[in-house]
Length: 300
Image (cartoon, rainbow, N blue to C red; front, side, top):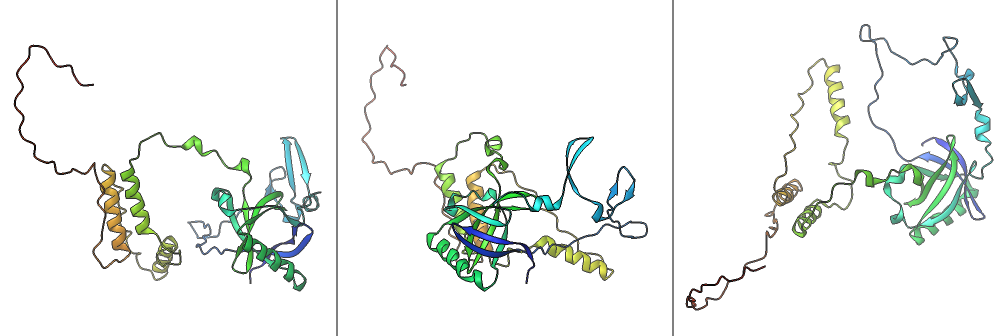
């Protein structure tokens, strides 16, 4: 069972739900240490006081705010824990919004909220069912790790999930990196939509979505442990310069269908390159007009 990283309560109007905050994710990446190449001795970081030039213990260390180089205001952990905020010990729900209205760029890590004992079971279930039926998420604030946080509460199966959320002024304006104005034809959009349709999946529970980087690292470590040379890395494909966008889209649809294992003939819709020509009825030849001395005006 994951350990509790924060304990408090959800404040929902006059309803209080005691909860424990636990991490909702696990990190399976391979961790490395640093070693001295000469003798493979472990290299560690030490906390050294720059004035006394000696290593200091954790009990001698405190936080501080630097006003200037010679003026530092010390701040203790007790002062941070007892800030005069209603969110210091509670997750305060301030509003409810549709999840679609939340920009995903503002969302961060997710945490499971576990009810704290039997007394919390009923209000916890009440809030979970209210969120599920309303098809909304709760916007909340709470103090954690030395600052007030913004987040959303949503329902996942039978559990409430809390996602960290960035404040509005923490998101950069995307206009500064917007691409230059270019024209995209309706045919090119239809081609891109055909590729999207071919690559659409019902869920992400698929062997294709795995950490191949970690797998490659594990193979290198295993080879070195067995005193053999790791398998040579494949040459990366050079990205091709797209000159014909429509041809690239159609080729991508074909490749995506083959990757999906479609056994039937891959039906790639040819995108029209212009208006369809209609068969013209033969008209009787007209007599040649007599030449005139004056010139016909040019058509606009």
